Image (cartoon, rainbow, N blue to C red; front, side, top):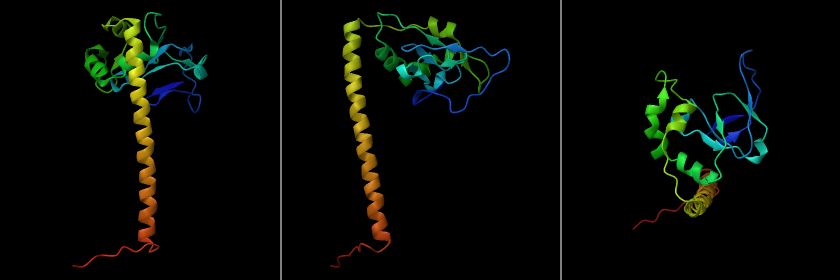
Length: 164
């Protein structure tokens, strides 16, 4: 599997690593991140349809405690305010900086009570739903605008100027 800003996805083509490359089976509900893209916000929760998929250690996965709501945790982690401030966790050269699991697990996160996590998650989920609806509406307006512009440019519709 691969991990990008669009979530946890299956790889298009299976690339076989070297003889020493180890693959690990990932389970539904595990938190996963990309060591190389940590500072770009590459995080996810393994969805049901990716249960049993494999990844290398470049995509470490962790079981989430029962006292932490997975959705809340993901909302917390994907905030640029969180992951961009973790630059000190990244080790390596400028273009190949990796955040290793040990450093990540040592980072401090204040976790509110479960009830508060649920309220935060519900609110953010509603907000995300509204954002998605507005993006769909904006895309429909763009499509409509393209159609109207095409009719004007091909002469199907004529625009009349008003002279005073």
